[in-house]
Length: 589
Image 1 (tube, rainbow, N blue to C red):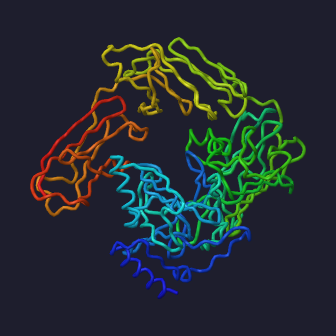
Image 2: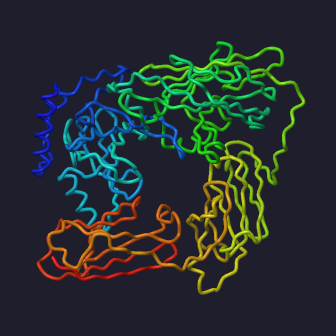
Image 3: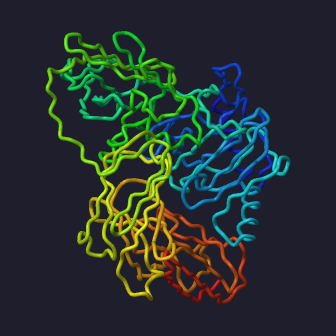
């Protein structure tokens, strides 16, 4: 088997080096262990890599901003390239090049009704690269995203698509791999298609949480308890019997999965909650939908996620949660607490291979009265009803269904709290209440010279005082923006132009394969909010510079020959409010 893999890899290397991309190695599939789909209704696909699969990220894994919609495959970390292969016959339906997000990505539609996605590629195969280059030069844009018709770009199983990389918002070489239902583009857990992944380790359980709930499912109080490993795959909590100050409660769980041969902390596949040996809640990560992304905020303990950067699964169903990950359990995971009768809690967590860990403890209702600080709020919002909050310096319009359920918010203004602001600060207190539909925040009170109107932007101020751009616009005399979360907001002026700094450039560029420049803006995080654009020209014609967003780097590869002699380079960079920097150089090829 190893000899066969080595043979095929050497052929692939020669194939890419020669620029041959329509080369298909059907026998490659025979060199990979056969697939046995766990569900007979699912097709069998080949692997997207030609060595054993090892995961650095799992399907449904909870991250700070949402679920992970695929699996991440690790590099083999050898001197050889990690070639990415089509998992089956089909046609390329979409090609993507982006500075962030998925970076370089290929989408293939298969006749079985599924679409495979290969993201963060370092480079494409020559034939795909040629198609992308033609589009980039036609649109005069590094970033392109276009769809292809059936039959326009057919591929076969085992065909080389490119090499594994780290493009886009990726922070280590890997392949982000998805399988979606073509109709609706709904992602399915790729492991359901029978891929063989070595995993002898059970999940690691780190912490549980107890939420005291009122009769409407609002969290009155929360507490966390660290878990200790007690041999085998069993965990314990101290104390083993927890008192809860309320008549009903919900449980949360923080943990991760480990796999053979890797230290990555991956997501857990299956979680069950048993109360007195009865199933109260069941979570299984088999399928998700991109349209369901907002409901991530109802699956996790959102307050702990945004305030403490910790990922807790709610083991009860939030009132506004419409995800289809759960059992149809009658109590939705909410547990009644009794004073004389402890409730036995057992949580099991398992990975896709069936390795299981568990924790067991009791919960009893504490003797009343219960002392809690009252939660302050200024405005109440009813589900399904729009509401505009009018303030002295502006307003916030909350559309109907701005929240997942009825909520209360504390909203206030600060007049003299921000040294660089040109407006008062409007604060929506961060109580961990997620938005479903984004409200519109408008400022009508501000102070600045009229000639700087075009330099105004809205920013959100974090706990360290750093400001991040919130894309907005003027609407008459009001400056408005749609906001994503609670926090402090104000208006600012930006008159500082972006910076262009040579990194790999000299007057004599003969013999060098590329040149690169750092471009960045003084406004923090503006580049990650669509806040910067650039254009480069060589001898007056648009030149392709690839944009590495996470390193603020643009790079031009001398793929198209220039005549020997002196050439003129011009780079123009503009920020979100129109501040512009232009630099020009002469160089020799």
